[in-house]
Image (tube, rainbow, N blue to C red):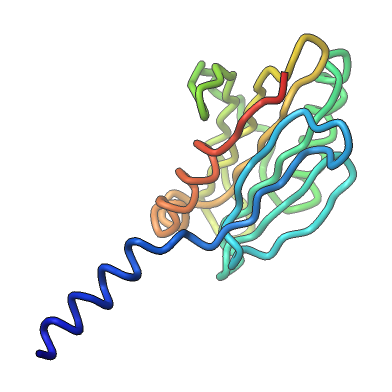
Length: 162
């Protein structure tokens, strides 16, 4: 009987919906939507939202801008790296990837912060003819691995609103 109850409890947990927050960026006239786990610390920032994993070891943000503001957005994020003790002198690798069905450009910095080796990804995704979505993901490879399912869920949930 106890095996049956245990199996039923596991199935109930697996069948239940994941607890997550759906976000429109910006809230009025959204350029994109993204889903972030409820247990991540979430806050509004100037051009979107940021979230931290429960252990504060992985940072994620989603922002939007007009296509004419991409250079300014990259500069703002380079300043953000300095403010957070991330070595921005490393030249990023640039690749094309797909996120939630959107083709985007990833700028990956394999660098270091105050805690040692870390990785920062800046992702640019199209969001209509005049807007872009800018994603930032920061954490060491070990920290990212410990939150891999949550990160995959976030990244695959990004949807541009055309």
